[in-house]
Length: 153
Figure 1 (cartoon, rainbow, N blue to C red):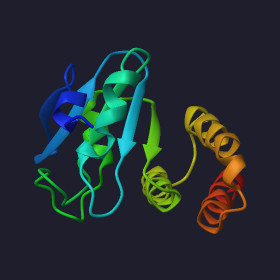
Figure 2: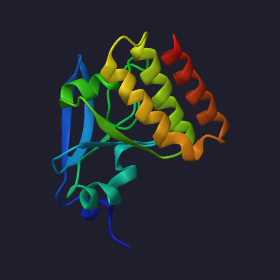
Figure 3: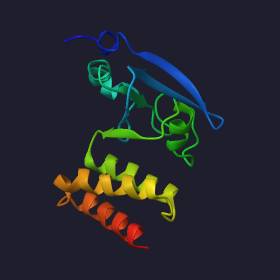
């Protein structure tokens, strides 16, 4: 078994100023963004073995969660500010478990507010399609219901 640091050869550890919050990101590659979201108590290195192999197809980024590891962030601030500073208009998200995916989706819905943009509406519809295999999981079913309600409003 190799060290995570050997697995990260070819990746860069960067710190971004995301709205005044020092945020650590491990990233590799270029292309469409693939954002890795670790679970509670985790850190950006949780996806060390995935970043470099996926960097052939994606700009693979693992961002420290609010208040975790080396991210000096106020827990009341949202991770999406880091997305703005990474220049990401669209990204694929990879979460450590379905509950972490639900938290990311809930945060996105809070930031969205009312849907007045066709682009946001399209992305939410894509998300509904992509989560359909997990629709029987209670937290995902609840998130999908909230998205449907938002789209219907």
